[in-house]
Structures are given as C-alpha cells and as structure tokens.
Amino acid sequence: MDHFTYVDGRLRCEGVLVEAIAEAAGTPCYVYSRATLEDHYRRLAEAFAPLDPLICYSIKSCSNLAVCRVLAECGAGMDLVSGGELHRARLAGVDPAECVYAGAGKSDAEIRQALEASVGWLNVESEAEFENIASIAAAMSLPCRGALRVNPDVDPRTHRYTTTGKKETKFGVDLERAKAFFDTYGADEHCALRGIHVHLGSPIYSPEPYVQALEKIVRLIDELEAAGHPVEMLDIGGGFGADYETGQTPPAVDYARRIVPVLEDRVRKGLAVIIEPGRTITANAGVLLLRVLYVKRSGTRTFVICDGGMNTLLRPSHYQAFHFIWPCRVDPAHVPAARLRHMPGDYLETVDVVGPICESGDFLAEDRALPPVSRGDLLAVFSTGAYGMVMASRYNSMPLPAEIMVSGDQCTVVRRREGYDDLTAHELAPEPLTTVDHTVDQP
Ligand SMILES: *Cc1c(COP(=O)(O)O)cnc(C)c1O
Image (cartoon, rainbow, N blue to C red; front, side, top):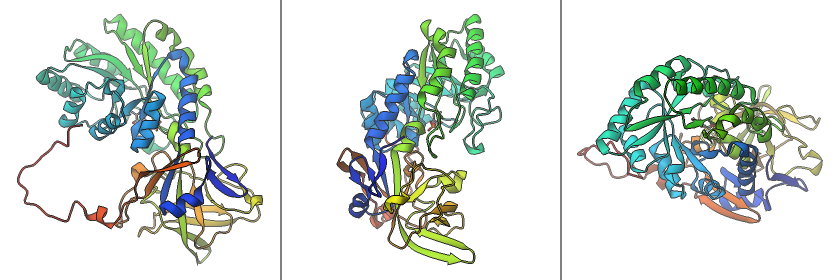
C-alpha cells in the first residue's frame, strides 16, 4: 500500500523517522513518499499495458511541482483542469501534447493558453463550450482536437459531491445527446472532434461501474463511426480507489482485468486510450503530521485538539471522508496491524480529533478509537497525499503548511512553510483600480 511503516513503535517514511521531519519542518506538515508514488504509477502502467494507454496524472489531486516531476519522470502526461495546472505541468517538464484539459468552466484566456501550448486534447463539456473553443481556435488559426465528455449514466456509488457520470451533473452530455453533438460539430475544421471522454466520479471501489460505462461507450463509438464520425481516442477518466482503510480498494490489476477486455479489440483497430488517475497514485503516498495541542474533556466527549484541522485537511468535514489517524510513536504492542475505521484494542480511548479553527465543523475524525495521547504528541493522518494540501486554505489566517518529499533516507522541503508575511503579501500596498487584467500570466 505505501512506504509508511512503524519500526520499534516509531513511524517512518521510507528510511526517515517522521518525528525528525516534524522536528525540523514544524507542524502541520505534509510528507510524501517518492517510492510510493513510483510504485503506484508503475502498477497502473503495468496493469493497463495491453491497452498501451497514455497515463495522464490528475494534477488536481496533488499539484506540488515535486510530485508532478516524479510522475513526469515516470513517463506520465497530465490531466489538467485549469490554466494554472497547465503552468504547473510545463514547469514539471511535461509536454503539453501529452496533456488533456477538462473542466466545465474553461475561460477564454485558459482556452487561448491551451491552444498556444498545443495541449493534446481539450475535453469538451457542452455545445456552448465547443462553439467557443472552435471560434477561438479559428481566430487564432490554431487548430486543436476535442474529446466530448459523455455521461454514461452509471452510478459509481460514491459520495454525491464526487459523482460526475450520472445524468444530472454539470459535467458532459448524456449518451443520447452525444450523437447529435457529433452530427452538429463533427466536421468542424478548427476543433477536430475525434475523442470521447468519460469520468464517472471518485473514488470508485469496484471495476463494475467502469465496465458498464465503457460497454455503453463502445456501442456509442460504433454508432458514431457508422454515421461517419471517426473516433481516435477514448479517455476513460480516473477515480480508481485508494486504501483509506487497509484493503479497501482493488489493486490496479483487478480494475485492468475487467476493463482491458472491453477495449482491447478497439485498441487493436487503432483506438488510443488515455487514463486519468489521481488519488490512486497520490493518496497513499502522503501523510499529514499534526501536533496535539490540548486534550480536553467536555461532558461525555474527549477532544484531541491539534495544530491543523479543516484548514489543512478539508476532506473529513467536506465529504465526511475517513482518514486513519494514529500517533507517530506508540508502545510497540500498539503498532496498528492494519488501518481500519474500527480498530480493536482495549487500550484505546474514543475521541474526536479536531483542529484549531473557529467552526464546529472543524474535525478530522469523530468517535475515533485512539491510543491515549497527550499534549505534544505527534499524530499522523494517513492517505492524505490526494486532495489534502491542494484543498488547504488560510482560513483563520493560518499560514499554509510545509510539504516534504522523502526518497530513501533523503528529505527535501518541496514547499516551504508559509509565514505571516505570506498571509498579507497581496494586501500591503493597495493600488488604484486602473487596468483590469482578466487574463492570468501566460504559462
Ligand atoms: C478529478 C478528476 C480525475 C481524478 O480523480 P481521482 O479520483 O483523483 O482519480 C480524473 N479526471 C477528471 C476529469 C477529474 O475531474
């Protein structure tokens, strides 16, 4: 699952004691394991090798440049959802031609940037967006390739905030509309509509929704080709699970064993396949380190108050997401044999793990059985490499945490901890409003 292991009761990331990292870098702090990133990438690449896919890493899951660089060195392209992500992909050394650009709300400036960079595919989410992309491409004389995002109306059985492939979402168009879409726009010479994109939502803990969706998509491709619309590329999206609990997700080979047969024949006939994994690569590759500030008993509840909460890790309060939490130093008898929601052990105490933010919704875990902890102890919040730091905020004027990359026994600060000056840097010199620059820096 990952390279975070207890040795003699003390948590290590690869060859490094996490207590030493917290001592040097301070807390809160995210720690990433390079070997874990590489392992997960490699397993996915090997499992799906029969489809020879382009693996476009979903930057939004963990956008730190050092993480992007590790994956770029593994051979990944990138899945982008903004101009800012295109900027990161290029800084990480990724060829924009190996990138796909999705998102239901691309601005004109972002579309121009994508065209200038010759991004491989623009995933198109609506008729209005297609017309806008095509007209910008015509005006700039920069032709591009488009992939229509289709909702196969499959329920991925995940949280409603992360379900995207059902009929009633803001993403893509439904199957019935797809054919008409190609009839209307399939001959456009500025945006060549030659691909299909599906992304069902995430995390999806079974191959079944992919199989159901892709069987529908293959039938759609047959129909489109029969109507004279060649389909060169199918992007099957991301959403593959991560082990938030030990053994929660099938390994990459299990997804591939079911998905490959649905597409193999098409691939032999020339269809290119793209996959867009995010969390399945990054989630288990990161932990968040927090220091316990106070242990407070109120009525029947015990609160473990830490120096980071919803500001550093939003997933528990935003999605009711589960993250395993455990002290970084425990009696060797209390080393967790697995990371589970309901841990066995009569030495455990039921607590709420919360942050310092002035919100009752500021929690990382409720009713959680933990070994006894006290002020000054270091806690690890596991499987936080994905949608952790990228969703962190400065709410309550809390500077953003540091990010550390570990490789073997080497540690590198890949994002320095913010200070108070970072909080106010954009506010110190108010300026008159003269020109309004709607565009951001060109990547
Ligand atoms: C978020 C997203 C992904 C990645 O999702 P994961 O659960 O991190 O794998 C892939 N494709 C699209 C279009 C997305 O929006």
